[in-house]
Length: 457
Ligand code: ARG
Image 1 (cartoon, helix red, strand yellow):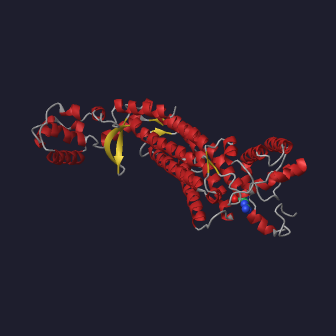
Image 2: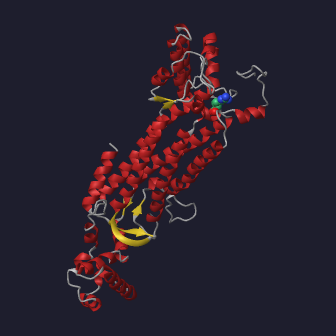
Image 3: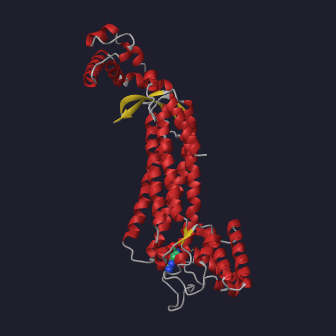
């Protein structure tokens, strides 16, 4: 069948060319945005007297009918159409006749597709933000339960200093709060209407771009029509925000995988979010955490793909830009699914504070506090650091921990040691002494929980 754009050519193309060219199989998901855009366009055309009120009514009720029928399934996508814009216009014209052919006045698919993507992403950005909030809430709830659960905090994956499990989880909540900030930032630049840029140069019709933008809920319009149709920064910004968000989920997932291993046993993931092995009966695999970690790669890939697609494009619209959709849709779908799984996976995991504490006791993570003790008694930090190191070395040799070294032995290293050293190296005390803002003490963690909860309200 001849294409709708038949004119200078007969509009008949090779079937393989059609396969390469057609975007309907993925841009059909934009049908609501496309119809919403067309409704506003018709209203603007009528308001400016470019089409008659009667034509506008026909177009509007025709579009409303198409929307309803697509939603109910009464209308199927005709895959021989080139894209969603052509499909909607074709059905409209079939249904209402001549008036349908007027809808595309003072518009091009170039500004239309840019509009559709912006409308789509404004909604998705909101939805993703809500999903991120749910993960933050799950982290805050777990943190609430574990303000006093001591675990070793790590650097270089070596046991370093005691922190609460809550403190560690809240570090992830802070990351995710920044992700929400990035999403809202990027939403601000998505919130710009390109419609009315037309093919690239604007139009000779007496349109009202601001009126149309306002009908669609945009706060701004693009101020250069060439930029209006060729800008995909808003897609790139979203993809980068999503890539960073996935990186955060991936780091958290990596910890969940480690913590649920037999080597750590800090947490137990609920059966709902683990799988068994087909051969090893003892296995409980953290597949969901692994997949979130793994899928991070594809979201990075989506960002790289679109950056690469755009880098060589001359102004203004080029068909290469059709490639924005699959990258954006894939990233949006992937991130949403991962967030939807992450929230209940975190909420349903069981922390094992006894094991955390054991690891904390075995790791000499109070060695800094031992040195600080000597500093308090008047020794310079460097000397105190050295003596503490010697004591730790001795403990390792003798299979002891700092808590089981006798006062006599301590005095053998330095006569400044007194009975009160045991108080200073008590793990709970070590944690509780870290009262600096953002530190791991219970009071500080409580403040963090409060902050995080307020931020997602
Ligand atoms: N399907 C196209 C896309 O996604 C719509 C814009 C087509 N414009 C054009 N002049 N061929 O980018």
